[in-house]
Amino acid sequence: MATHSKSNDRTPSVVIETLGAKTSETKDGLRKINNYLLKKEIGHGAFGTIHLGVNTLTNEEYAIKEFSKSRLRRREQMAMMRRGRGRGRGGIAAAKADHGLSNSPLDLVRSEVAILKKLNHRNVIKLYEVLDDPNDNSLYMVLEMAHKGVIMQIDLHQAATPYTESASRYYFRQMILGIEYLHCNDIVHRDIKPDNLLLSNNNILKIVDFGVSEMFVKGDDALKSTAGSPAFMPPELCTADRGGPISGKAADIWSMGVTLYCLVHGRVPFSSEDLLGLHEMILNDPVQYSKNLSKNLIDLLQKLLEKDPSKRILMQDIRKHAWVTNNEQEPMVSEEDNCHSILSEITDEDIRGAITSVRHIFTVMQAVAKFKRHSRSLSANSISSMMDCDVQRPPTKTQKLNNLLSIPHTQIINAMPSNTSVHQIHPVVVERRCSRSESPPGDMSSTLTSTFSSHSSVHTPH
Image 1 (spheres, one colour):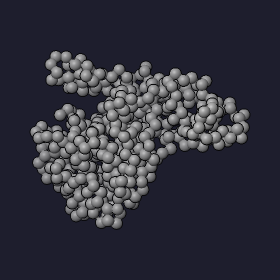
Image 2 (cartoon, helix red, strand yellow):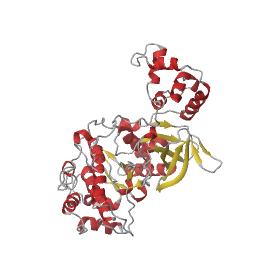
Image 3 (spheres, helix red, strand yellow):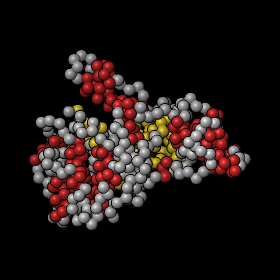
Image 4 (tube, one colour):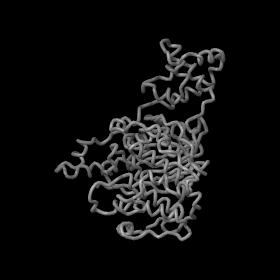
C-alpha cells in the first residue's frame, strides 16, 4: 500500500462566496441554504456543527460546516481585547484602531478560507463555497466530503481498537505528504490529531480544520500564539518559561508523533482530566510503548516524541526512516514531487480578500436550470462550431462567448461582477453549460465528517 503517486493539479482552488444566501425549510422539516439541503448532523464544536449536505441541483454530497456568527464575533472581540492589553486605556477600542473589528460575517473565517484557497493537495480537504444568510445567525462552509469520517475516535476513558503497523504506516505516509506540503507552503497546522484526519471512501487521508493554523514568513516558523488540543501539544508549549521562539514545524512533528502513537495504541501517550497535571506529564514523564511494536516503529516514535524540540526529528528524516519506507521497500515520493508546485506566499492582502463577492449565485443556478429546459432548439452544429473557435483570441463578441464555453461554470460565475443580471448571461453559454458532461466540483474524491476540533482546543496568546 505504498503512496507513490503525485498529488493532483496544484492550481489554487476556486472558492465561491455567496453573501445573499437564503435559508428555508422543506416540508420534511429539513433546513436548506440556497441549493444545499442540510441532512443529519455529523459533528459539532464550540462554534457550530457539521452537517451532511446534498446539492439538490447535482445530488452531490458535501460536508457543510455551520458556524455561529455571534460566537465567532465574541471570539474575535476577546482576541481584540487581548491584543489591546498593554496599550494603556482603550481596551477593545485600542485594538480596533490597529486591527479593525470585522463587520462582515465572512471575514470571521477569512484566515481559514485564505489558507484553503491557496492549497491544492490530495491530502488536504477542499473548500468549494462559503455562504452567508444576512438574516440568519449562521455562516456556512461547503467542503469536500470524506465518507469514512475520522481516522480514529480517541476517548480519554476507553482505548480504541489500534491499527496494525501496516495500516498505520499507510496512513502515516499520507500524513507526512500532507503536512510536508503545508510546511513547504509556510503553513503550520497546530492542531494535528486523529479528529482532524479524515478518510475518503478509497482510504485517502484528508487533513482538515485550519481554524487555528498559522502562516509564517519563509525561514521563520516561530509561533505567535499557543493553540491546539492539550493532549497533542509539545512540551515546549506546556510551560510558561519558553526561553525563546518556538518552532511551529517542530510542534507539528510532535503532534504527528502523538497521532501515530494513537493509531498503534488506540490512546494518547499522556492522559489527565487536570490540564496542569497533563502538562506536567508531557513535560516530565517518559513515554510508555507497547511491547508488541517493532523496534523500527519504537525508534521512530521516540524521535517524534523527543521532548527537546532542537533534537526532534526533521521532516526530511521522517520520510527516510526505516519504518516509514518499510526498510526501503516502499520509498516515499520525493519532496520535490510532493511540493513541486509551491504556491505564492499568503499575504495579509490574501486574507483580507480571501472571499470575492458573488451575490447572486443561487439566481444564476436557477437560470441555468431554466435555460436547460427552454433552449433545446439550438443546433448541435452551432454549438460544436463555437467550441472549435480559438479561445485565446477574443476580439469579437462571439469569440468572447467561446472563451466562456471552454472554462468550468464555477469560474464563469466567480468572474461575474456582483451586479450582474441573469439576463446578461448569453443563453448559448447556459445551454452549453447544461448539456456538457462536466463533473461538478464535488466529484473529487471523498469528504469531511470530522467534528470541529475547536471544542477540545485552546487558543491563548504567548
